[in-house]
Amino acid sequence: MGKIGIDEGISEKLRAWYEINKRSMPWRLTQEPYKIWLSEVILQQTQVVQGTPYFEKFISEFPTLKDLAEASEDKVLKLWQGLGYYSRARNLLYTARFIHFELMGVFPKTYFELLKLKGVGEYTAAAIASISYNEPVAVVDGNVIRVISRLFKIDEPFNSGKGKKLFNEAAYQILDKNQPAQHNQAMMELGSLVCRPQNPDCNNCPLAEHCLALKDKVVLNYPVKLKKTSSKKLYFNFVVPVLDDRKTLITKRTGNDIWKNMYTFPLYASEEEIKEMKFIPTIREDFGDFEVMKVSKIKHILSHRVIHATFYIIALKESGQSKKNNIFEVEINRLVEFYSLPRLITKFMESKDVSIYFIK
DNA sequence: AACTCGGGGCA
DNA sequence: TGCCCAGAGTT
Image 1 (cartoon, rainbow, N blue to C red):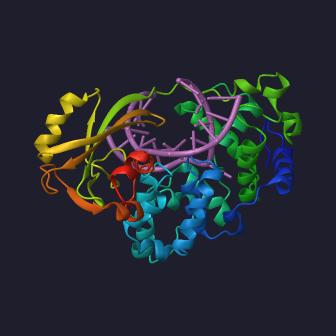
Image 2: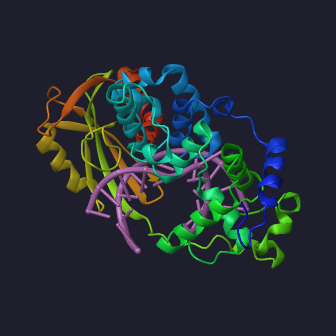
Image 3: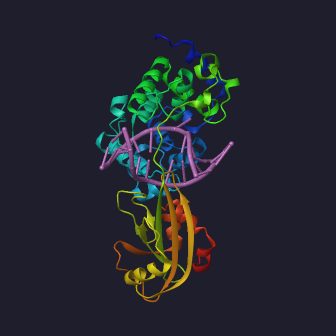
């Protein structure tokens, strides 16, 4: 215990603060690896308030790992709908099946073994190992990076190879090896509640006397990060056929890109804008004769994409046939209730245009 | 090491 | 707008 330049009192003060100030969260009532794993995957790049209802839904629908392992991907993606980063849901199911059917339901118990699971990276492996099994490994997430960068004034960008190593070492040095579960959660809670990105509450920080950035009044300069790539524009043109008042045509996305294995209306994606006059002949080629009822536009912003979506609601003159692949008929009611839809599509479904041309 | 993958909330 | 969020997988 005790490394050069590191105060051994940090973890003790941190954990004392945590016991008084920690928020109540459903996954904090247990150490079951299944529930800890589920909560950690849900919380990847997701705020607690946003993820909590999804955790409740999943536990209610799949109380055990076996229940999840036996579920269909359609059902899991439908439950995940709206949360984003859908590969998390696909990998979650893959790993549930792997543990249940290949590992005979025995959850891996060490950081090293957990790291092998699909969808479980360094952070999640450390979280499960420490919280469920008390293994002395330090978690390093966005919160921990912020706390540590300010505590020690680390100028190395955390998203560089060198920085990653530095932050891992620092996090491990201040870890209380006897209380890894409490310590790790306390670090993240401090980053979330006190050591916030914009207006940190340094007056009420239990580690204020240790903080080098606070001492020099440069807290907001940390953490240092490499610039990320800017977002690209995309133009998504959807064809929304009205077969009768209740039916339409949809497709399942199969490519290894955005919204994989989820459902949308037939889509023509482009990096350039496609004007209506130019697009109409394309629709006619694939769907036969039709009448355009309505064209509505939605701008959908993602972290790395700006999608300019155009929905062409059309009444088909011929029956629901298409030359496009993988197109099939579905009732609107069933589409909304059972098919996993990207937020962009549910936004459109909630719009007035849909209620005018479809009867629910 | 850089890119991809979502969606919501905040100043 | 830009940034952040209990990140991971692919190229």
